Image 1 (spheres, rainbow, N blue to C red):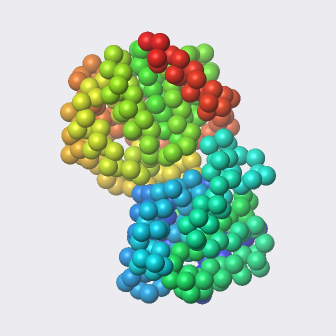
Image 2 (cartoon, rainbow, N blue to C red; image 1 turned 90 degrees about the horizontal axis):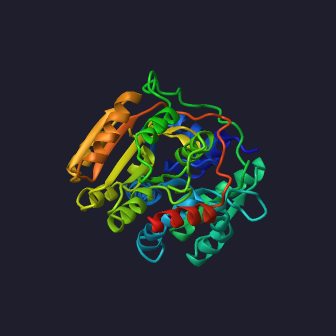
Length: 379
């Protein structure tokens, strides 16, 4: 396997001078090393992948170096506009290296939401005329490909991609000491249980990608509750709040609750303004804030460093509550929000982390959709 430390040193020796991106599960050891080892003026975790490309562009313009952008291939779509209309050799000609975790690579078993993305990843890169090579875990080949990527980015004056296969990176030699800011808070599972305990049977729930949907699903199964009220957004991080908004605007006869995460809410924060200024009166937007990208390695977000409730107020939400931290307050706050004319925003602070034995939905996304749609359209 590839040493994260040695690989980054190879990149820096070749000319990489800054790292920016969105953490990925396949790159989590590399991301953990970069987050721990690099000073703040050489590394930044961005809100979304397109922003990372733009930040890298600014770094390159200011320094002449070759920035590194890391992401999962599920976020490749967020990069397309700035890659083609900003960094491309035919526009501003900005050299950069993209290190992309190759989820759903053909021949490698993965979750349904990654299979199509993985199958078309290389075709997307080729359609964008971006050169790429794969990292398969062999250290000498990784060093060669890292040097090639930096040199090729300089030669072309544009982006070059390295695709990391599953298991390519070994354990990070350095890791950030976990923040203690979540100490004493509820687990996210306990917070979700308190939320769902406050919901009438008529409420529709849309949950965000990652652990939140998995925890909601497992809780429903364990409690033998009806799962047809829940739309589990297993992919498209950052968009569950807008899915919920579309439902709330067109099905005004019953309330809609979105279970969102801090990383997802920050990824497309402009969506908060769209919700807040809408007339989706039966919409309750719940953000479970644990201050980390919990599903891909626990790298920090700025969730505990900014006021999400302040952003919600400024975005026009008529009802804003939180941060709340205990089960009783959660139940009271959710129940009250459902009674008020929204859209409402509720922030809940929870502990980072999830159980190691947390399960995954047994139904496919298509099966989840079928059950959900049948219930939603019959009411």
